[in-house]
Length: 375
Ligand SMILES: NC(=O)c1ccc[n+]([C@@H]2O[C@H](COP(=O)([O-])OP(=O)(O)OC[C@H]3O[C@@H](n4cnc5c(N)ncnc54)[C@H](O)[C@@H]3O)[C@@H](O)[C@H]2O)c1
Image (cartoon, rainbow, N blue to C red):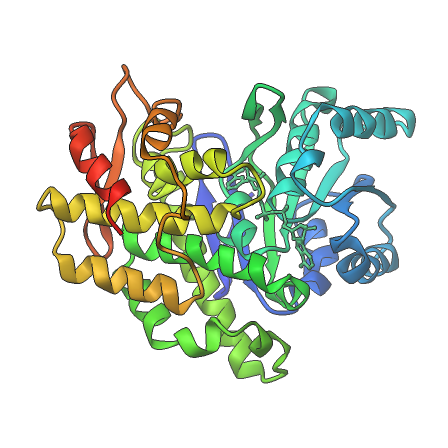
């Protein structure tokens, strides 16, 4: 099928798939028509979580039923613990027990947790059925819902069981962000800023220019269509960075690694401080500031740009300093467990300008330690 993008659509193309990523306000109402255009007529298996569904599920179900679709719904508890074997097995039992067929479609309505879990269920049931991602967090709109990585956690580590399974469509209705808790929203801005730093200086500048309105969660309740249009545009611009990177490198053999900017130290910090103490986006913000300082120490980045990034992170309410009591030795040793480690050398993603990064495996331990021990 040919796919002619509309003005608010991006197209993600990989070796195995080509699909639209649509971002903007009020898009859920268009889902029935879009499914029909994609030739997706089977039963819809709507998977969501108990926080998200009451806000956004009933209207969606009603629109789909009204258009003649059969919708079955399953809710998991909200939170990372749902990305595990127990809930996955219950989803399989629900789908098999109600006679899922190869032509059916999973709809993942929620943040990254639901997207990863429902995406993995779709990837594996009956050896794979279609999935449509309906992200409801800022993080999922610009990152988790795009690119086809799905999976669950194992007791021995996060995201260790999974599959690449590209969705047939990603529909990000930015109106859903109205109900997102402000702290989750802020954590999502960290990923948006990350996309500006790694690949899009103009996105970074837009974020600087509009910090006052985008960083204020109460503005989401603003009914002004102009505001929602601007918000949709900036989220689409951030999603476009992931679309471009994944289109170039679906399986993370090259370029895709740059999406991990800020994540090496961020993951180590999340582990050291105990999962849940810091949100992922907050840990990534601290990791980005540390990576920028490392880049400056190595004379790859001007100190002015370190400050510019710090100001932007802080303008969006994000932390940049390591929490008190952090043990530099523990953090340093945790970074060695990172997935980006190749042949025992950490591959650091370091900025060289706003909008540009490089990958280096020769950062001396002293530079990392200096950043970890100074404010
Ligand atoms: N597959 C990928 O490429 C990829 C990339 C990045 C992150 N991830 C994964 O994503 C997960 C984190 O995703 P997340 O930050 O979206 O967290 P999440 O899915 O846990 O959502 C955060 C919280 O917000 C609630 N929520 C979500 N949308 C809401 C809404 N519109 N209104 C009210 N409440 C809402 C959820 O119930 C939850 O409590 C992690 O498991 C991470 O591993 C995956």
